[in-house]
Length: 188
Image 1: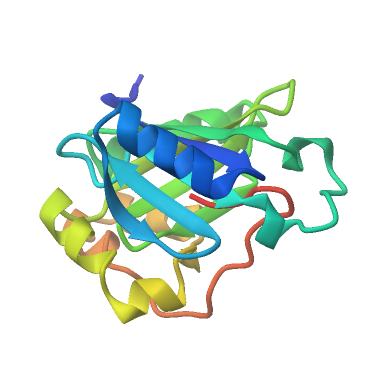
Image 2 (image 1 turned 180 degrees about the horizontal axis):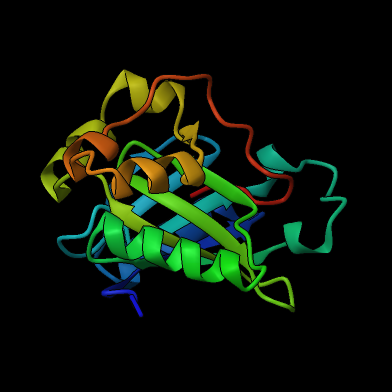
């Protein structure tokens, strides 16, 4: 069984956006990898982001219609060693009737999002590029225009992977319209 190779990041939904970002910058001596009025990505080590923040005052100004859209942990992310491990996990979970609610290529990661029985959300991801490339991409206009990414079909990826398409090719950012962020999800 493929298991995550490391913890990746945690995302917080907040109505005290600037205060939260400032606190994590100070406490963890972090740096900003990317920030706009709606989203901020911070890191304190060689990972492209360890913390992310979704500004609910912009994303859900009148309060979320779903209880999971309130302040607090949005999701926790785990990184797999390679695309094969992520796709093997997808296939194993699918066989048990567990399906991702969001399938997305963020540009820096290829990610599958799941909910546990209590509704807690987790992201299973594989890095699509090096940390240096991810940091550079997060400073581009392309990322600023679409920080969510592009929807993907894990069934197509799994079939391509099994047929021998190189992992490097499968990890390339696909072309397509920006993904609609699932309600109350907030971000990557």
